[in-house]
Amino acid sequence: MSELKIIKADYSAVPALSEMFIDAYANNEAMQAALRQDEASDFAHDSYWRWALGEWGLGGGEVYTTPDNEGCVIMRSPGKHEADIMQKMELLAIVTRMMGSTKIELAKEVCEQMLAVPPLQDCYWLWGLGVSPKAGGKGLAGALIKTVTDQADETGKPTYVVASSETVVKTFERRGFNVLSKSENFPYWFMLRPAQA
Image 1 (tube, rainbow, N blue to C red):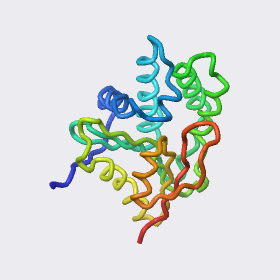
Image 2 (cartoon, rainbow, N blue to C red):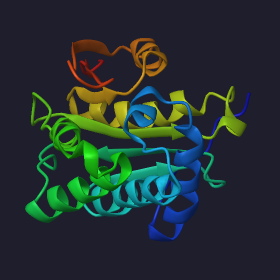
Image 3 (cartoon, one colour):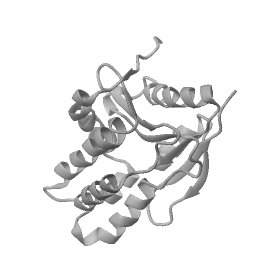
Image 4 (spheres, rainbow, N blue to C red):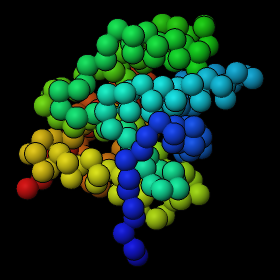
């Protein structure tokens, strides 16, 4: 199998990558727990991924994809983990829109968990990972994860991730991540991978 080409994304890729993430997370445990089930759900879901890719990813981290936008990883480097007040407010508004106004307290808790600073500030934070269902079986998830873990390994830093389904937990465990803890009220698993020599 030929090596997959991974490139840095820019803002022009955000609409296509948002669409890819929506498809990739169609059956995800956390997304299904969060997403309201009405005529506004598609808009809310798209708003969330555009924020994650643009404001959180490209605005303060790095976003990697393929030339055809079949998969994507959003990463924050060591020391770039803390969200500013505007990012926190935007995310709360978007997640509340996703969940519906009757779930505002849960939306607050989920936002706190999503932006909870990793237990180690001095680590790489793999913040979002998605692969189009049409691109499954190509090894793309592994290649995208490796894009982040290679950078972490080069600097001797661990990699942190919040997995959002049991299937995703297994994907990360196969790549050296260990579960630190699980959220009590939402399908989130907090995981860490030590730097590899």
